[in-house]
Image (tube, rainbow, N blue to C red; front, side, top):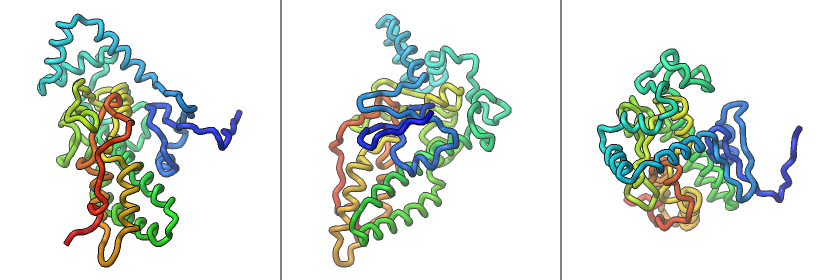
Length: 295
């Protein structure tokens, strides 16, 4: 049975497996065939089964006496305690942990539901990073396409062509999630990721950590982690870029690498667990003049 959604009804579309929001057609085109989507009415919140499991573990931990919590917190803050964190946070799947396994045949459970073209964990994790970066590119470009001034739009689309070339040079930053990479990866060599805290804080005060390489459940849970723009892409970066293009005069040229830095690099990205991903309006801003080349 098929239902039509009235044009006057506002809905939010998210992925069924991890709750990631589908913000535009560009991101939709990157999804695998038969991906299940969930449509939410205003005020509705989607909670995946994975989040329910995580919250159950949090309730379990909350029942521990204060002195025990203090000891555990101190233990988890130690760099050398990553494997011990796995023991606390993966109680239900402890028997499935296979952090070092890399090939499909060595950890078939981890690869359940993943296209067979991915032969290693690293290859799939690299794809996940690239998919996120591509979604940022596509959504930002779609925002530019809404510009009414044809001359301004043409110039800005030219900027995006340059950034697309730069993304190809950087392999679309697949190294962010690649534990084997020698570049600026966001994890250690075992695949442990640490939450960097909300955009307006220096660190995560809850010691959020995750290793998506360890088990299927952790891989799915990893989808609840986000690359968060400190200076907002949609509300700040792109609108200010449009203003810069319109105000440009004389021999001034737009600096595509400044835009690239703000959209795709760690200069303006923090990797955060969903609890630390604040949706509120932000004070960090950018100056329009920063988008011009300075000789």
